[in-house]
Length: 354
Image: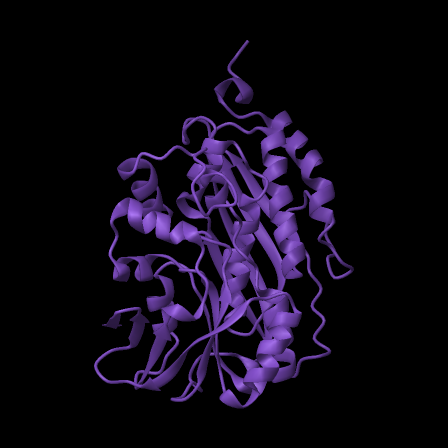
């Protein structure tokens, strides 16, 4: 008998089983606009342009990063797919786009159908929360390429927005207010620093029960990234003329993600005392003896998305966000730039940067 594909490391039958296990979850995200079924060479999505005069497609792609290390360590794979969806749909939302569909790419050394189905179940849950259809993906078995039990994920989102309603930040001006929407903890950024501080420097165990945390340390860190699509789209529907900028707070933290949408002659003044921060950030900072600025440039610090708005409809926007289940905070204001792009007020300290 000659060598076959399975003996060399790729199990086609396992791939078929994985497809069978994930099929129900994938199809649960489909509406009548999805014209293809699982297993085709491409995903078919019929665009309804009846509500648009000049429709613009907006795309985004991202992964989960080293947060995957925790999923491997805890052998918990049912929520990491939510992170995958969130990272892309929140990005395109920042330009005012409504997510339409999503595709995923999963690569592993040895395909485990049940684990794959758990991962895809999380992706489907994230898609439903974002109002997007999961119309395709790829599961690649790459023998010898990954460590045993490990995998990598990437995701791709496509959304739509009316051309005249694209949010670029160019309309932001001095006197605009900054609303922060609460995060769910770390989301999917800064995990390399967090793991170094908690597990290398402080030598905590993943199962550690620490004061101020609802769950053990590993579970707290695995909380999935929040998806802000539905509440923010509801604000854009009713108050679009008052929303001048949106920033998804990901890698680079509050500092870089707010500065990147500001016109050059403007700066953001943020007051850190204006919102409740999850205890996980203080635990990380103390464990790693991390400086304030480094924390602000790495983590979301309790704010997952920022809206920069005109003051005139502040009360209405805040009230609607609360009615949609958000925890919005007025965290700052836009001002004329001096020699910094951002000023952050910490009790007893003011940091200027950018």
